[in-house]
Image (cartoon, rainbow, N blue to C red; front, side, top):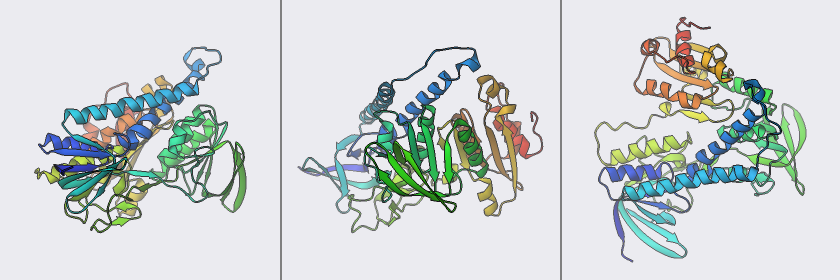
Length: 465
């Protein structure tokens, strides 16, 4: 078969890859996506989307067991786990099919198979023993990442789960150990806890959700522990003994050793980039700690080869990958005013109960950077809408540069904060100071008023607390 020529080839059809290809098509490029598994990547098929469907179910389960607080009564509320999982998978399938439609709509070619670089401007796609040669002046690597496997704690699909097995459980474990307290670990811990499991979380560092502001981490831990979650920080799982249908883990930390027997273990200890088998050998593409090195425009050390998304490193977020894809393509197209991706303006969201969201610097990091700061805080318990909703547990924290009024960071925990964080993201993108935020009128009654009050508090002007 003769070579097929394109202006742009994208290796990987996740949130970074398919968005990059569509933007390229909008700009008049002949673009193609190569995907070996599912369009939409991990996010749509095994990550962001199906987990949110599961977490929504667990929120409903929680409400069903607290109906009395709202004046309702129901006897013996129960769930069908198979139907819960089926709904989650259906949501994922719907959105993955939607990506295929978007690519067709934008006339982006899709090649099914495993792709690898094959010399300057060349990519080979292999599927079922057949090879297809593709050529393009520009190639974007968007191969994503996969779960990190710790020695002795490798996922076996039965007793020790990765995120994939945790999303399609055949039955609800009565006792569960989650190793790792980043966003993935905490979301699964929250889901299974709210579905009725006994959950223990083990974190190697001295606090859970270690990338978040320390106050938010502390607030979250207290909230989870009140719900019944057991949390062990500064500890590691040193050994696991598998039984027929249970696992006994040896946990070491703080000078103590304890054994814990559970039905299942979820390993959520980070990710590694998918850099193997994609033809990087012999190129000038540099890899460091399993991640491709690329600049803010996606350029690698190899001319004509770019990289975006999880494979280039943290934050490992779908919206970061999509943004990088757009920036990379617009730079390739030579558009004016293309700005390198500013990771400081990428929001992070964790969809546990209560939700957590943040953007920019933590207070500690701002001080480490030599900034003189002003800090504001406002609790949900002082917000009318939060109380009316029965969601008084939460807080908003803002960090400003004391000299310039720059919003350095914003950190939130509570109901719907993953929907509200974009207000602060817009503020940072527009380089807004406290003056504009103070003058902004926030609608009443909304939980978003807590965002306004947290700004006012940083400047000694808080009204409702």
